[in-house]
Image (cartoon, rainbow, N blue to C red; front, side, top):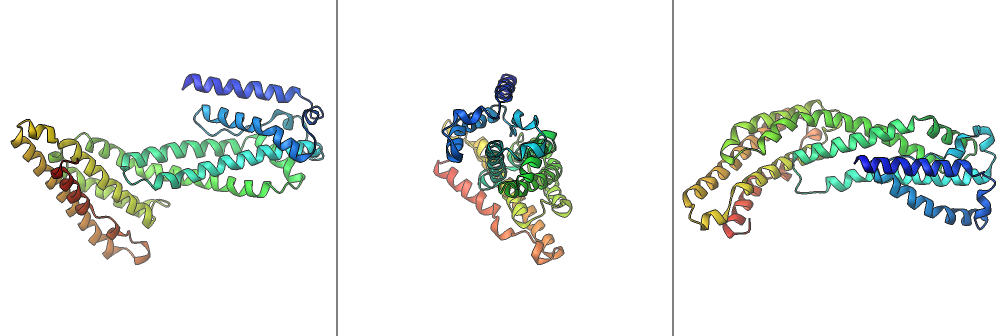
Length: 314
């Protein structure tokens, strides 16, 4: 990672120096003329810039040095410079769209557990916070001022996404803070054998309820439903790890049967806690804020897992 960061820094330093040394009046001479020619000429730079940004593993907003060497009023009158800055702004907008769209891709996963959810929000919080801090940098604000004075049509979509990034940063920080309540008990849970799990489940269910009651952003029906589903995934994975057909066929019949009983008791304990939470939830929560417990069926999932084991598929 250190080498990647140094490589990314070196790329930006060299690129900034090259652009800073070139006069604005010299650059169009290298292009074929007209707006279309300029856009085509800048495409290789955009591709190189994009690959350089992701070398460091974070979203980095590239700031061309030539824009910082002139006042907003002066720069806004240079049409060729405005065109180049609009290309940079379009690239920033694309980066924002990629970051904002990443959440929906992750939320579609069906096999993730609560620890993966925490890892996702930790990474998302770091990325969005990093972008939000970059948006406050003088260089970014300077380019926005130039494009605002030039009445660029690309500024309004960018500003809208920039606000979404800042709002998303606050939400991600809040979600991570509440989900972190589950980190230690879930880390302990994955180290246990099925027979040791049942006493730990009520505490985890209570923590999920605390998140539901107090989180300003993670308290939606879909997210809480998904969180219970992720917890069910963790239970299934834990049971799958403890069951081995190889050991059964090697003659370890008694221990294999005990492991299977422990898995059944573990899943039934989660089912009981889950159904109890559902009853309490439906009695105390108004309908529009209820988690859709009917979409989560840990008992059915556990039964399916055990059936697959008996068929030799697990």
